[in-house]
Amino acid sequence: MTLPTYVKNGQRPAPETVFGYISAQSRGGAPITTAATFDSAGPFHADQTTLDSAKSLAQGAGLEVTATSRLGFTVSGPPAAYEELTGGRIESYEVLQYVQQGLTRYVTHLDIVGDQQPDQHGVGAVRRAEAIEAVVLEEPRAPHRLFPPAQLPNEIVESARIFGLGTVSERDSDLVHGVGLDR
Image 1 (cartoon, rainbow, N blue to C red):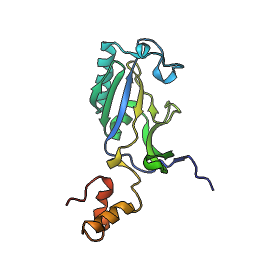
Image 2 (image 1 turned 120 degrees about the horizontal axis):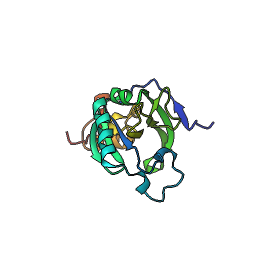
Image 3 (image 1 turned 90 degrees about the vertical axis):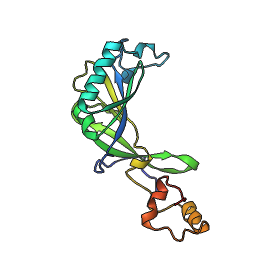
Image 4 (image 1 turned 30 degrees about the horizontal axis):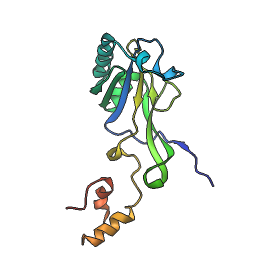
């Protein structure tokens, strides 16, 4: 039996903080979402007035700007802020992917869905599009994973035994999320 490569669940809540990227309206006229080639970033640069206007729209919706470039800026904020900006809602979906150590597993991604939202996964359109071409969502970061491992990896259980920490219980599940064995 083959596993499906894409599973839309939409019933899992989005993390409290969602990270994304906002592409400002390019002065080249062609949105980055419809570009046929990417020979140069020049056509996708935005002028300073457009960048300032796009930032104002994002911050007005409740997003925090974390870094800026001539193409746009990275943002973070609650799902409600993205929903305010785009008019859509954030839903989760799973993609079967190759991950570290040659493993294959489902990885949670986020999408903006709703009326007048593009079909591309993870990309949203803005209702007042005079300064913003697209909103792109990042996959949730490790602490925000929607599907934590069902059980502790064998390496952690074995390390706990070796270091004399006894058995690893459910309360120690934070070991899976990067907290060391140095308690």
